[in-house]
Length: 472
Image 1 (cartoon, rainbow, N blue to C red):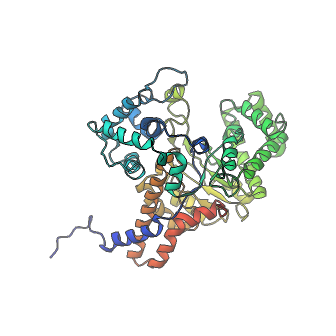
Image 2: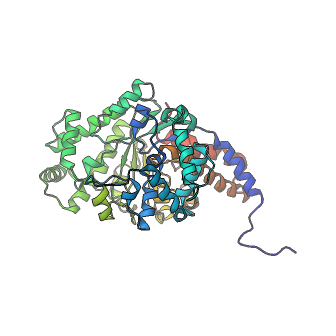
């Protein structure tokens, strides 16, 4: 009689079914509808720099972990706001990572980087203190080859469309160059996402100057609230003309509120005078979400909401190095009450499409899945940032499918700044979904042909449809 093994035993069919389902999506084109790759990378198509500046310096997942063990970003080449000295020797930066590679055991950062070494650069040298130079030299040699320039890699990755993210204060000149080269514009391979946070958040450094800059680009007088709204609409029109299909809004909370035009104007004018509190700034952000929903119904941009990050929680890190270097922390986020004004106003309007993300996974089954399952305007975005991991992606499917199914989700969004990690992140997501769907097949909850169809939808068809990229 076999010895009971209740923890480790799984259905022997599962792995085979998962591989078969993964094969359905493995070679489908990549849809990257939201991310932070610099459009200059593809517009200029210059060779990448050294391995350290490509893979370590800009990766706040990596620098954050090392900082937690007492290694400051200065030693990893991260620029300082005050222009102070930082490490400039790329090989020294690479060796420092190698010497501390054990810190990344079990983390998605290790998975992404090792897969990038192996599948993108075709180098199968393990990263250790002793092999650091060999791995560095092998990747550097690849970067010197024409086949490893940005546009060539874009082709090899199988990216069908990639959306970058720009502010309304951006003149979109990089996207204009891409369009001139046949890469951008409506239906293009590289498009932008409209991200208005720096002209909406009254607490943002330089907010008034950003608003003035937006007004100049739009040809509108932003000294009045009416002119401010007109400038936002003009910039949205410019983005849409350049191929944009979605906007993105990264607010501290998911709060929404409907102010009267008069009250909104008073708050805006106080913001221009620099006479607002933190509560005022939160109220204005909450009001503007409804304004953007109204605009989206008119112009068709898909709205994305990314709330829940306590930005620059590590104040010392922000003071030394600025934003987006690993100093942010997730926080609990309420959606049911916070989104009520927005959903009361527009939640049943099928012309509006809102993709919701969270950093608070306790909200998936309790709030977000039931909301997406109850309002035509809502779809659930992929696990994001701190949740963009194999285990959290699996928990996402387990948490939301009961209430939202698969088709109230928006497929995978990589949301990355690291261009070379894009195919790796999509591959991991496809494997996770294949494993989850295989479990349903094994349990006789879903026939294999339907699981295969769902697999292709999650990987390709859903993000293409939800983000209105059918022309790509």
